[in-house]
Length: 116
Image 1 (cartoon, rainbow, N blue to C red):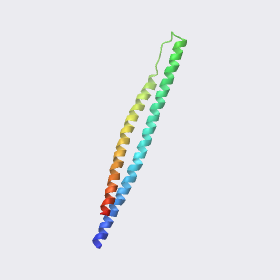
Image 2 (cartoon, one colour):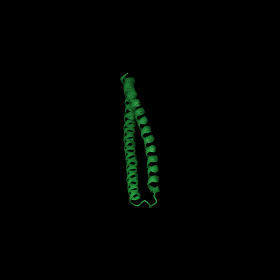
Image 3 (cartoon, rainbow, N blue to C red):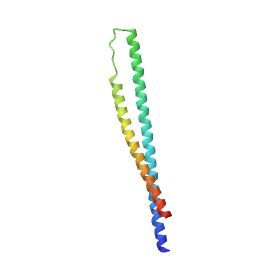
Image 4 (cartoon, helix red, strand yellow):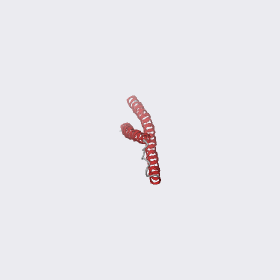
């Protein structure tokens, strides 16, 4: 019976560690999902701003055909940076979800080990 109690304590400790790891992985995945959403929003907002500016430039050109067209390089650089942030956020979110899946598997294995 003492051996069974010791084994149960060991299993409970494993389950507790797996619970904590799962909670941390879930929190991290949620945080990375939020970053991904923010990055997607930033890209979309920058693209909208560029489209609006291009429409305004086209209108000015139509009104004044002799005007030389100028693009806003800063906006295009902002878009490029936003797209890079989006790519990074996607990678971080994918990693976080892979870690979450691993934590879920570890947790499930700990529970199954105790049942057996």
